[in-house]
Image (cartoon, rainbow, N blue to C red):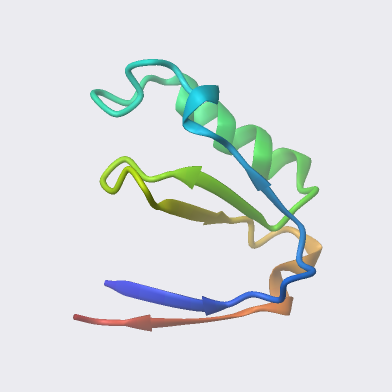
Length: 81
């Protein structure tokens, strides 16, 4: 499934760099990775968290917190391929 989103530029987002993650994060995701997402969701400061893609090293994945106040400010469309 492919999803696209229209996200306003002014919408705040957090970003995690690969250098912030454990060295072996791509091989077998350690439990420490879940803590990044859990902390992001609990703080609810931003709606979006950009993280390095495990599959495409030059790409980012975007985690969305639907409980954050800005969640309704963007639209998402899912495409079945």
